[in-house]
Length: 442
Ligand code: DSN
Image: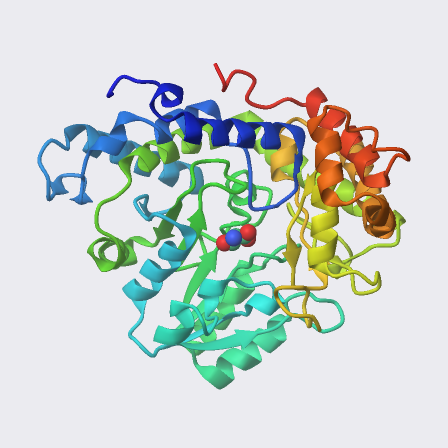
């Protein structure tokens, strides 16, 4: 049993993985928080490091037999410190949400005030949403983007901070397409005596590569995931000033976590090394160029990106002038092989389950090697599908589109060719020109 291959041990799960491999190979991953991890990162994630408990920190574990884990975690820490030029980093934290939870736990008392951007303006659940722990255990207050420009209004942030006197200000977002000025946030935090935390889960790769201003010099704490633009394993880190190192480490363990996932720590070490390469810096610059090309293509087709465009890896497309919800648009795009997510736009009149926006991004497609030319074409396909896809869906339901694709006959529907199935075929052809994971199914 111990030496059976995955396919031998569990053919059912293996088959689902093969289906997923085919889906990833033949569709366009346009969700800006997703990416393709390298073989090295995935090998580390699936390695024997999964077999061991290592509660505690290097040199001070609660389990015996941890000498290799100490070496591994120290290596991951050193690489992260070198990459981000930070004084201290915790590499054990499991996820972005848990990173924020541990950071709050380290710095705040129950009921303390947090000032952050709300989810409906581009923030994250853990920035004080009332259904989330952050809105239950702390007192959340929110700053907004400008109603006209949809840019962060730093004057309003200052005004709000003076009114609320928060213990902690959060700078960072999940759906903000522009540069965030961490220096101004620092000045605001200093003015009201608050800690400043940046949540850079989305832009971390850009920050590591110098393609977005660095929050580390300005913030008490910086939290991030490792699987988005950083292209590592599904996980997170917390960076902080040395002053807060002990509080942060205690906040993670024993604060909100017990045993670390050491196989993920191994994969984080691998991704930090990958992120130090020249190729990674060029990759991050290309992500931005690609996103701007996608935006340009959509603007030419009459779409309105929130803030007029992008400085980073994502676009927030306002569909409120298109008579279609974000959910409907994302469903049509998926049928045509372009996998996007619906997203609220600032001051959205629709509910979070419908939304008036979609949030396409370019980290994954850039990993595939696609460039501006391909992004431009994808923008044209997206426009065609959103503008006309519903008309053709009436004559060709989703299951027929699926059958056409499954037959390998994706260019043709039954009888008259549907727009969705034609584009689905063109997308599949493009994907074949930029293959991924060639030998995964060995
Ligand atoms: N779920 C992530 C995203 O898609 O932005 C944030 O946690």
